[in-house]
Length: 629
Ligand SMILES: Nc1ncnc2c1ncn2[C@@H]1O[C@H](COP(=O)(O)OP(=O)(O)OP(=O)(O)O)[C@@H](O)[C@H]1O
Image (cartoon, rainbow, N blue to C red; front, side, top):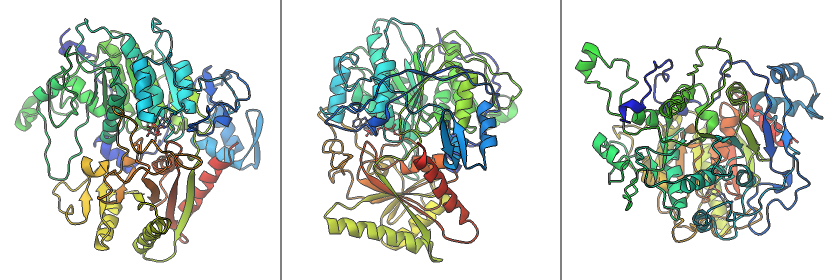
């Protein structure tokens, strides 16, 4: 089959909204509204890890030793709209019934934002260790190298070990939603069964041209990190993992790579720049797992410029807009994972995501209907994708749950008991601005953190500061520079002219970001940051090796709040204004206190007057999540 024939010929009925996905992600990650599709009566399989498992990062004892029993919960069928109606009628009352228990206002608030329909008390026997089987020997070795020999699976990983490893001869597509709090190891929870399956069913003789697994992520930064993680895992399994995302280079540096080089990266030859190239193996077989944003993967599958408005006629010729050659074919794709599914199914991304999924289905010879959120009158229809389909998220907004109810009613939802909660060892401080000079107050707080570190003999904390706008990130970065505090600003709209990129303030490149991200190891042994886990929750600071000569302050918007695995040396998150919704807050806060480690979030906001309600509201919402039983 030629590459062009792999591209579906049906008309495109949905186009991504204008502006890059990256730009829109920076603006707002709010799941604004549901897809508009009516909720459907559904019966699905739900299972939670036991509550006693806590965050699950215990190293010495199996995390599930406190299990109280076992039971597979099958959620009762829910008539369309029942939950929404129930919530409406509940608002304003002090105590209400949710399921079998009485809930307070707190629960009602939490229910309004997130899907909490998975009951918390369904208890199970789950695998307490990483073992072979079900893992292959090679994967097990990689896990031990990455996490240390004593590492135990987290609850979401135990659920995955139990349910996602199935008889490899089964043709039945696996469909799962994995939900667990930030930093709880969801990447491994989907990578292990997927890589295991790819290895088990590997056939080096077949003339395969395209990837066998796609992992979708909302940002290039996350795509690159997931690809690095995947590479570390497949070291012993000898599979090929590739990031489709271009390097995030410093301002003014151009890193275009020719289509020929792109193509060669997928056939085992070398390339530079755009791709992190895994040098060709002896067999020269193409990439097994490809990670990228939906926009990037669509571009590779359909050809560069496929979504430009003017592809034919005078204007196109004038502007030299020509649809490029497809660089990758989708007919070999057996697995699709949607990481950060709540974002990729939110209104800003859902069209691209669904289009890519339908392209894969069509390329595999089983086209599915293309649904469009614009066509709200459509009846819910099943999307029976001909591949294994796994979604993961640290938050399950009601809109995502509605989409799954409507189109994937049989999808199994596996959730950890800590879903929609802050990490166990994360402390929270609210810091209302007390003067008109907000910048000075934040700087003073920063200095207090570092002074405390010095007094305690700890290495200086790295601090990630989130703002709601790019302008604010840039402005505060400039202020810090004036006060001799080196910082990096990584936002979706860096100054491409490099105007402000001089001096102490750096406009983010991969190198600068790397100083804050957890380094990847896996070949020789665990990375310094995962070896010595200290304190009750483990996850002590890494050795002072991770770019600690560079800036200790990173400023960003929501761009970096999703999925990125920050180093344990990032012990503080500053949130300069309350984010627009709780989900965004949970993701920002979750960049610290990862993998059972500890950390602190300081939330700034107006103390009084106009706009002060947002801080109060954020407090109430977080209290609601905390109070949830
Ligand atoms: N079983 C384990 N024991 C110890 N560390 C682990 C374990 N599983 C994963 N980790 C580490 O935990 C960190 C967080 O993992 P990961 O990024 O997959 O979390 P996540 O749940 O996807 O978070 P987010 O929701 O923020 O994307 C990683 O550094 C990973 O190496």
